[in-house]
Amino acid sequence: MRLKYFSHSAFQITTDSGLVILIDPFLDGNPTSPTTSDKVKADFIVLTHAHGDHVGDSFKIAKRCDSLFICVNELANYCISKGFRAHNMHIGGSHKFDFGTLKFTIAHHGSMTPDNTYGGEPAGVILSIDGKVLYHTGDTGLFYDMKLIGEMTTIDYMLLPIGDNFTMGITDAVKAVELADPGVAIPMHYNTFPVIEAEPLEFKQRIKKIGKRSIVMEYGEEIDL
Image (cartoon, rainbow, N blue to C red; front, side, top):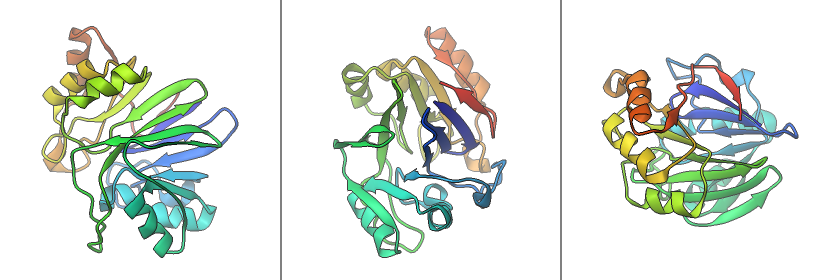
């Protein structure tokens, strides 16, 4: 399995069997994205919530690729209303897909589409694929149930925001890693806009001080998991 970071909260997962999953593909309007929506494909598109910088270019991609949306019920229905295929889920529920198992977790944030449609509860997502577990927290503040999530699931990779203002900043993100206890922490949701400027190397250094490992992925970088 391979993980690619496009910047902000946008990631691409390519399974060993060749299936492609996009998470929050905000590309065309993203000043830090190394690519554009016409250059990516997706069999599945996972949306953590309905904000424009997370729904991003998913409709363009899904129209071209006939992607299946996976999101919480209200946001899935919104995608269906736009003519797309979607699998409706909700917080705490899990489901087996062709790529593996997906489960939605809570996230402390908001969720409103750019056209002011309520998008349901914001979410984090746990993906179990090819023997590895990834926890993409979505946009969220710190919450103590991250400890429970880590106790119930051995997390190999935790993708979490550090940009502050709209989400956790570095201090809270370091605490989140303490609570969830992943094998590797990967920072996201920073430096896209001035209001969320943060130094990922500071995060990495502070993670090292608590005895954990962090990988700072460059925009466009792809790694083997």
